[in-house]
Image 1: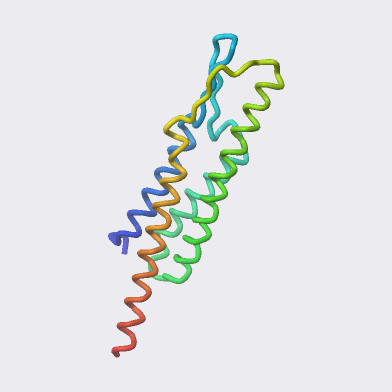
Image 2 (image 1 turned 180 degrees about the vertical axis):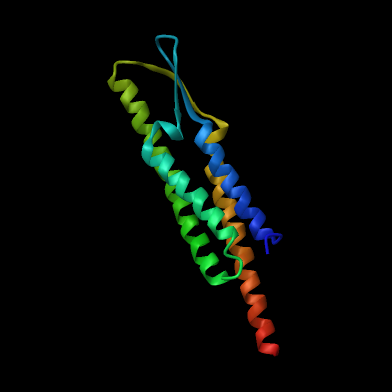
Length: 146
């Protein structure tokens, strides 16, 4: 059933993951009056992890007939989302260290709103997993009544 609430959560998680592909995540103002940006396309590994998250979320939407597999894949996707948050942080630090190693001084640096989308992805995936679990519990209770 596409109209279940967990399908909406999975679709929102996929949408937020897709948005991270295109939005800047971090901005640094450098001493030579230029700005340096970091986005998911700056790092092949970060881009690949977000692509996996989006694909798993989209696959899970259409696994509504197999709730156990849908739940397992959503939990795996939650782990990928946690890993993506950590990976994003470390890649931003590597980018900043690379700028400093190139002899550029960072005057100010800030995370942009796109950097907080992985947290939304994690929340949406958690809510989807909770909805799938509740559905499975409901079906098991109805099977006992038969």
